[in-house]
Image (cartoon, rainbow, N blue to C red):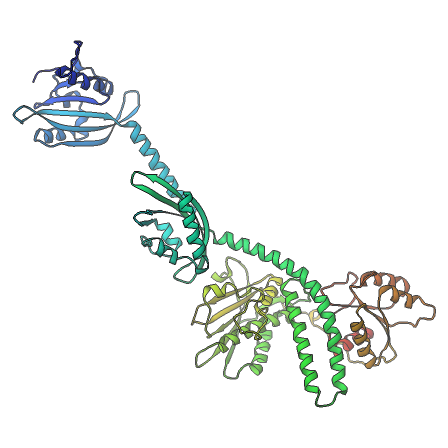
Length: 633
């Protein structure tokens, strides 16, 4: 085979062999031909550019001698394979130019056959693929960064072929949905079954609209196989490919954000509830204050046949008052309470003992107080919280328990346990466990909502657990719930633990019983006719001298009158038209500075001067006893 570089300067004619030679010579790809001895017999201009060697330098030379690096890449073996009749392709062989430039070449070696069909040499085609490999490297780097970012932020990536229905999920997507790696749904219908039933139809509609628009985003809930409800956001785009449309998507968990938003909304609702409750409580408690004392006074002289009716009416009024108080507590509008450091064990045992006398005798009630478990608390509030939890456990047993219904109560000091959610320090845990029907995850997430209840109509207000949570929050604590269908429930009240013992100054002293001063004169000031009349009637029945006033101005006129009696006590409504209770109190201090004032209010109020505050409604005996105590102080 003669040597040639295929250089020519003669005019080319169609069909002329020189035309093919010119095409090879001017090709952007490198062309070279080796004979059976491995010597170069053809070398085009592109090869000169790629290697920096001219045709004169390489023609007639053995390839592996001119370019020793061919052996490093195994190309000497490739040439021998081609001489045996094979076609060999090698991709992505890197070469560093003398100036440090990185080049990447793809090579194709194919047999050159003579007219008899025998292999006479090797045709080598070399293509500069540096740009393509650089782009591929950039793509791989980008994909790697995307993968790292997706993994770091727990973003799942997925694809969907609408035509074929094939769905591909990466491991993160499977994890977000609570499925095993590689366990992607078989298609859209199976995917939709993973979505919360309440969000399923909306998701179906959003996907249909998104398919038409080419991009969409939507948030939805899922229920994992373990019953956990999670919020996910999916962002999706349709791309055009040679094989048709392909849907690419990213999905990530937004449960924490949704819960934070819900907490914010709950706080806003709580504030609105508080504002609404304050107004309702004032009016409602005034109504009850006009009912309770009258019912109790009527019961003292009523015929025996009417007593059950009056007692039932009184109990209903007291229940109504309790509902208002629970709502006030939940809304954070209850009065500031008195706290002291006490062991909670005796309080828990006392509450359990009370429940033993009122619960169904078939329910086994066990209590274990394992240590001193000291805490700085309002005892009456914590007692109410524990009682609410016990009643909730009892109701779970009533709804369906085993042959041996049981409630276990444990009070102990704990620290650094998983359910403290990272809150370090000493905590007193009051843990109440029942073996009732249990709850699914969706129900358990709602049990602290006000007015949410699974009980039949008339069997509860839905405020018990909400109130318990509010009491825990007011003490700097919290409540947790663990439950599963058929496995009972455990609700735990946590309050910050404290060291130390009750001091003498902490102990609530009961007033020394004394006989009431029958000649004490009391001024009752209230704009509500029924409240004013009922309060005066109760106090007169108890032996007090009573004068009434319907407003602050009227009260001041009575006190300032020259012939006015000397009042030993003023019972003053807080909210009145014209002069309010606190304003009236200020004027009274100027006229009769030594006369004590007691505020009577239908909503939360704290006197800035420390005057006693009584909350409506009050039972007749409670009102009389409290005023007598104040008069004797």
